[in-house]
Image (tube, rainbow, N blue to C red):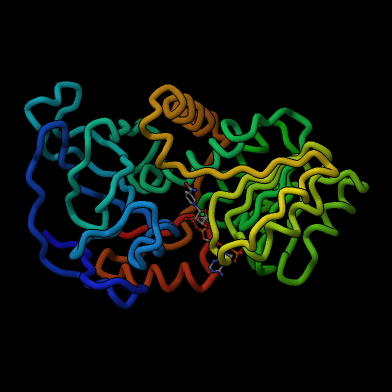
Length: 322
Ligand SMILES: NC(=O)c1ccc[n+]([C@@H]2O[C@H](COP(=O)([O-])OP(=O)(O)OC[C@H]3O[C@@H](n4cnc5c(N)ncnc54)[C@H](OP(=O)(O)O)[C@@H]3O)[C@@H](O)[C@H]2O)c1
């Protein structure tokens, strides 16, 4: 089969499209023929050996996709070939991927393969930062950084559906309308404006209750300055670089909270994971959650997709098509 491989650590340039062996079934697994594969910012970290999961060279990047089950190990009794599925699992930049049965989500009829591939990581990350790390209540004000991106655009919609007032931040004016179209009440260009000052102005000096921050260095410190009393900042990424060390005394005067989040941890926590899956499918069914596909690339052009994501022009989800 065809797929993407890399045999040295580095950026987009280390990936190449090649013949790789068809994965053989092992106990507890199913093999999926991928129809649409999502690109995640974490894939960029993976080839650079900076992700939570470490590559074993030569390795294949990718952490989610949607497709059809092609084969099922004899000990897996609850899944069968021909079923439309989405999954979260490593090695998805290929025509076929071997996945543990527990990582499979049956794709509802109303979701296409493209929507299914774009869905799991981005929406579950957004959902858990809002409803598991934080416990959003209607009327709270939320800042979503990098709001036009995959996780960001999901977070805007999930926070709105939870009754929040939402401020999205983006790095260019061209991304503003998209974030507005997906429900943000205010959109701030954080390259040309001080987002903390804007948030304080928009909340008449009170500050915001929650900040979802996957940018890191350029945004974390400033974020603390525009949190309301008892406000909460969830740090779940570092696209803009590792934040400076945080002095805990900064949290005292307004009783602030800073927490972290990594979605892979949730997959093994069945009850919490299922709560997220059920609710994001409900929101999607009710038309309250849609993930726009910013651009599609042929699988062979994975390196181009990574370069595009690094360029900060990308919006919504990027897909690779095998
Ligand atoms: N903790 C977890 O479990 C988890 C899971 C999924 C994703 N994440 C994190 O969530 C973030 C979003 O992931 P995604 O896959 O949906 O990607 P994405 O948001 O589609 O792309 C990343 C965005 O980060 C912003 N950014 C800020 N500084 C940047 C820089 N120096 N270089 C490149 N981009 C920069 C850009 O938006 P602007 O140009 O508008 O600023 C860019 O569009 C990433 O940081 C990712 O690592 C974390």
